[in-house]
Length: 640
Image (cartoon, rainbow, N blue to C red; front, side):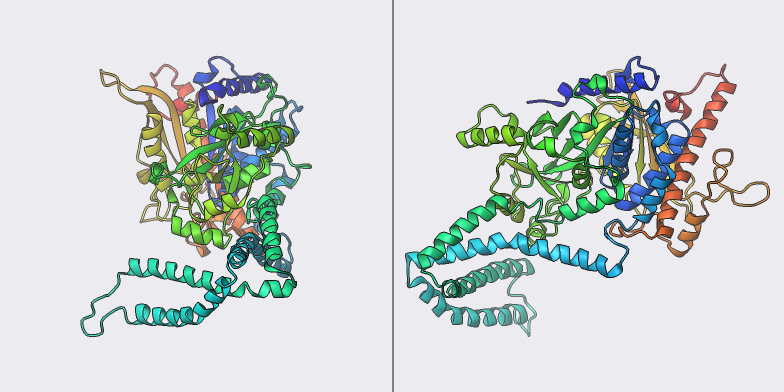
């Protein structure tokens, strides 16, 4: 089984190739890695990160990044960058082709990326019609299977249907009595004492309703033979064949909202890809030495594992990674991204999986009751991917060997898809099945920093654009806990983010957009000293007070970009107080809203990097002074 350590060396070779092409320092690369993390948050995150990275690119610092680790909405703009740089790999400086004005205009015009047309009627009909058609197709197998079971019973016992029919009237009366007594009279009128607890009532209700549905379905099964004009035996045979055939072709990755979501994201962020790029083809060749001048992409998703008792709570999921060289997770192992089905995985599909926020299984937030109804109603954006563990295990059974041969021959692992549907319906995805369920990377870690910490990056710059209207820093706290418990790393902030970034009650503005932290290895040494391995710069969506020049005219980023103004952002906030933390459910940005987030992202980038630049100048002016290890400019000397 391939482990992280087995392919990390290949990534280092690729980064060496990147630094060599760009004329950067190649000494002790593994000890001086630089990573950028782009958080989840849908179109809000994508737009803020677009502005931030554009600012970073204009200052010549973006090309210093060795890794881009993205989650969900951050992956929208991350995928654009990976694809653009790959298209211009032969250029002496491919970074000059990023963030062109025509690209910015395209993003602005696709702020409502889920709508396929400017025609409002067509938009609504496409959204609603597309959902209901796939939802109905998704249910066909369940209906055919139920009919098959009903006719099978009738075939074995000609009196079975008569018996079921005779109980139908009784079931109807029982239904009326049940809902009248248990819903309206479950509390004694005089004493107020409850006969049933709400929990028992809901469970009993679900079981009773299921029984009644089965009875009426079997009773209705008598209609089909009369309609087809054939004996029951032939009906059973036809339904059996249809059930099996539909089961082999009723792919939930197609009969769900995933395909529509993929289509819309590609149109908005990868419109220039013709044909769609495969993830493994982001590398110009299989050899890491041919990588070129782009940062290495880490596309984060969540592996859902709710199906066994030993996978509960925070352990009900794992970090599943898509990258050009290898794909997989710690629990499944890793396989080459150009092997079997993963050879067909497109960049847009990986981006879509990483952004599958609505899904029946949602990492440590999963709920089996919710999973049942979301699957039944087809409210799911997730993806059933081939399990790397099955591919790489040595002792395969005869069926797995046959499927493995087929997969190697045709790049597809044959699957009876209802098996996945039922596992999703009852919340039972496990590691033992041929398919694993993947969803939004934010269902386990929403900032995208985990994989950069695992690689012990010397400098990590993270842009947290997740929705946090109360500035509770829940995603950051989740990262700090997981870093300590799973990686043995302590992230210690030099000043508390709540103090620096949370808006002041007196003004409604934040002091700064960012906070710096040191990364230490645990445990501490016997003498109490801790090994310092890197620096973490945490940047959060926030509004700082407007700045004025000598003429009292508003002007942002003085001496950095004269034409950039933040007026649109402040004007937008006047009428939308929740900005910049409007709900993630709002994925329909008009141009004013899009501009507000875009200019905020640019201001955040220039503001943070300007502070660093000024501190570096102070350092040069005070070259004789001993620098203190907690000064933020020490962290960015790597970039210089």
